[in-house]
Length: 202
Image (cartoon, rainbow, N blue to C red; front, side, top):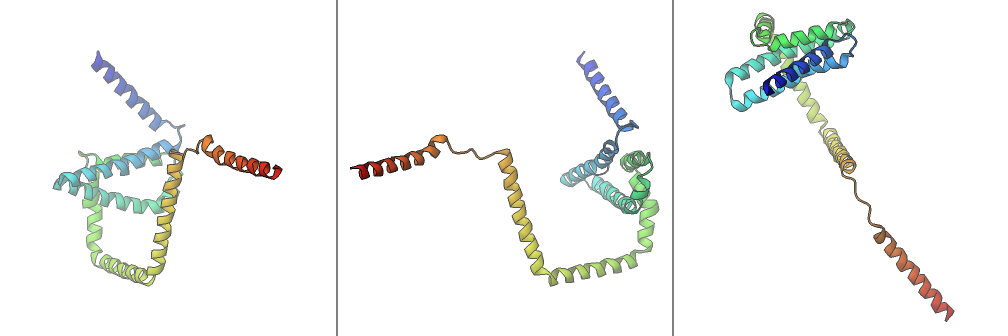
């Protein structure tokens, strides 16, 4: 009875999720969130597990995935604005991201072996020059603008401290002091005034 209820619950949940994902009237927010979850969130966690377990084969698998995903993201920077106008674009992207990770297909390894590795091997010398040149320019920029970088870092530090304090105040507001504490000094002032008036009367 319990197993049947659990099976029914998982079936209903899966069906609702699938209908929500494939609903043509649903906004792109659902499918884009699914793409982000499948493409980034799950791989980040899987990479973390592979590193923590020191599993060499899993580490290699996720390194290959990130190389394939990175090249896809680079291509998407230029094509996303055009392709995103087509209604099925995000569904195709979701299927592609699943294909990259799905173990039987092992799409990321196929993409890396057939396309990415040959391209990078062919252009490795030129790419090394570009990377070395860019690294040198970045190092020069950082050393030339050290004071500005320190200023921005300090400014960001203060901003984050202030933001943290604001969030803390919203979550745990400071309790105002009791009425007795506020009224105490006022009563003392009134008594002093009354005493001084009674002295003048005498």
